[in-house]
Image (cartoon, rainbow, N blue to C red; front, side, top):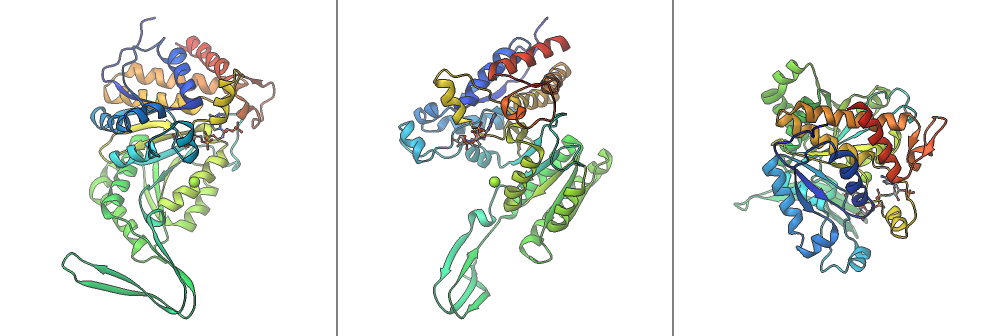
Length: 402
Ligand code: NAP
Ligand code: MG
């Protein structure tokens, strides 16, 4: 069989620990035998980040802006223990945070559905995609403990020195205060990323805040979404037969539980943090979630939603067999290849990506899966595969399909 040709390279961001091991297996077994794989390689493994003083992370993000599509392996976000373990000169920042800041993007997460792994909510027959605004609110809040009676005020001083004030509370004893902010520009980017992704995936977009209580703060989010939608997206949504729908956050939660899925749920920062864990757990596992960062200009970075699976890596280093689930990492590659195929008009590449996804799902539905899934499935006759034999089983299914 002749290998499938590519035109523009994918930005390839390699990573750490067990997912780095899976990364190579996926390339060797599932990609290189079938595709004339073109990538521009960036090693985001922690050793090389240290060697380049993290420049490699910045370069990989700029390359994503240049080429438009990246695929990323999970990476270590250093903490004190990692600084020791890797003898780091600094506690380097989270690569995902750095890349997100440069692309100004929004992360969309969606579960991968397979038969035999049923969501806890039986009506959810389609995926629910969560979009989390990744800037501001309580994550950038300033807090104060109030020790005694007194008056707390919000004060804004503009660049000419004019002050505006609001009383927060007249305390007659100890208490607490918090100051939060957000930026219109960031909310606008978030809105555009959501509208673009809805058009891209032909799904309705839901957005919810608590604007009845937060009449200025949350209402600002609602207004920005509506203004951008009316001015730039309404016609395209109508043409695509999809809908933008705003409601209150408590109403949204009730509707989500009763829904059958199949839409994008845009969330403010805190709501997205909490709800994405609920959605991931209710659908099964982080190892069965896709994740893509979409910038308002239409750059895409695909990754797995889970981490580097450190515990399995230490087993692997000791020579023990592992059974680590590679599905989310495979889907990061198929997402990126499919998007590259769409942008470069390479239907064969898109077709390959879809077949690899199907081969992966078929493998699990035929009872061959990693241990994490075997513990959850309702299927009988399950064979627990190793990290490697699972990928080989997918390859056999893929070869039969091609
Ligand atoms: P993790 O790597 O997601 O793993 C936590 C546990 O979840 C694992 O020990 C394993 O459970 C299970 N698990 C996760 N992915 C799995 C998979 N693909 N197959 C099978 N089981 C899986 O999270 P962590 O241990 O908290 O973090 C490890 C490192 O990852 C940290 O250094 C963190 O900074 C980094 N991280 C990176 C990203 C990213 O790059 N996107 C995201 C999160 C965390 P059992 O051990 O019970 O089998
Ligand atoms: Mg969380």
